[in-house]
Length: 290
Image 1 (cartoon, rainbow, N blue to C red):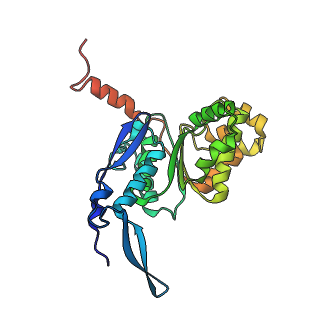
Image 2 (cartoon, rainbow, N blue to C red; image 1 turned 45 degrees about the vertical axis):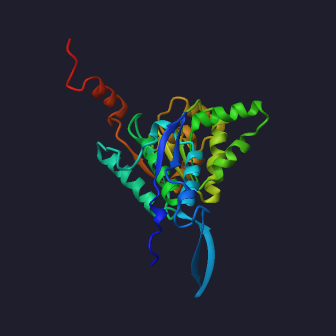
Image 3 (cartoon, rainbow, N blue to C red; image 1 turned 135 degrees about the vertical axis):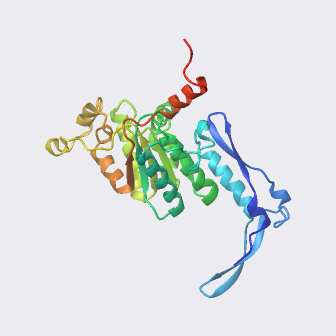
């Protein structure tokens, strides 16, 4: 067994920078005692009973590459410090969600994705970002985060510059792990449904892992069997007022989610952590005096 190299202990810092979370390696390649500042080390690998001398990036150089990839994933700045350890579950389903996210990260890439459903402020985005952070910085996976309504807006702006929706979607369809937040959000227009369908279809067909978070229920509508399959026009009408994800995204997408992901739904009474924190910050020693 090879002993760990000195620069494998290189650390990194993650901070807010503008709208996004950015990672920076705290030690420079130039100071690496193993590669003498070249960023490359010689190693010996054995394959099929034969040994070869190879040149590989030093661990510190690999970490710089991972930090750069993490920064390009565009995780929201507010979740720069998100981790599994800082998630505080308040009920059984939240505890199951953080355990599922940990196991996903530990077993990747031999795993399915997951969908987290629940009220606003219950930690769904926190767990998405904690998972992507681990995959990018610890495993070197190519990851990306997107809030679906912002993607729709980006594509609409792209139309004005002569870009197609497919051009904008393509990078998201090719990363190893994509997290789609606020699934089901939007006006439910044909444009939005077609965009979402194309993105998920590309990732589904290529076998790439996708994670989701949504405020809509994962339960199937009771009238699903009676009404049958809905085309796009009928789906737009059905989605306008529905609080059920299957209505919001349509049968085809929902069916693919069932195959691609594990489902976890938080109870409707799960506390909004942002509101709870706001109250605690305002009233550290009890309710305000009148």
